[in-house]
Length: 229
Image (cartoon, rainbow, N blue to C red; front, side, top):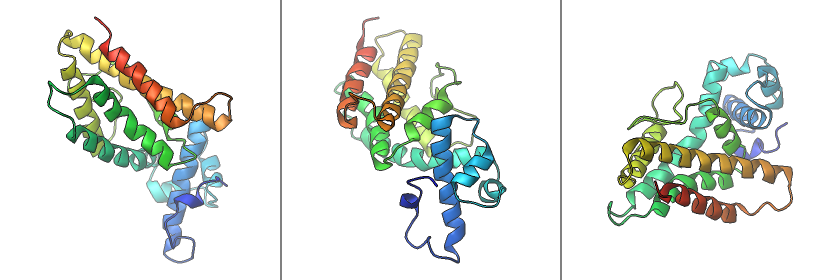
């Protein structure tokens, strides 16, 4: 059984009756997230179902319709609060002439780190980075550099808004360079958080607290954006 599945269940879903379908769905979400993050995208459905404590091997189809829909549900579960937090930080930015590169980087990194802390033990950073691994680095204006074929969600729009602001902040650079630099920077930060998550769970020596690591990561990302052309 996944260690933290029961922490994700809302009050009242442990009893019988109407709570059971909701409980089964949450257990599948937690099991899929942990197993895919730690073992890769090739984890068989049957192992996800077993780890979730479900006895019906068609449980994924019953609750989500397909494996792809299950993974999308895992993503949306985290991306929704991240987008809400990020939208708040974007709204608080000063005008274009007053805002700093650090404020823009923090609008990307802080919501990710906050979600990781909310979900201790966290597997989200690794799963997210894994899903991005085969995606192209570059993106067009107004597009998500990591967009997978999926229904449009509010999280995508907020992320695209932040990238647009980053590119506008780098208006002193040729646009292709500004776009590429913003893409590389956000990908670097996300991959760094995934590595921290992996090393932290493994209990490796010298792993800094997430708050300290986030500050270092932010410093490096700011330097990437501000480096001379």
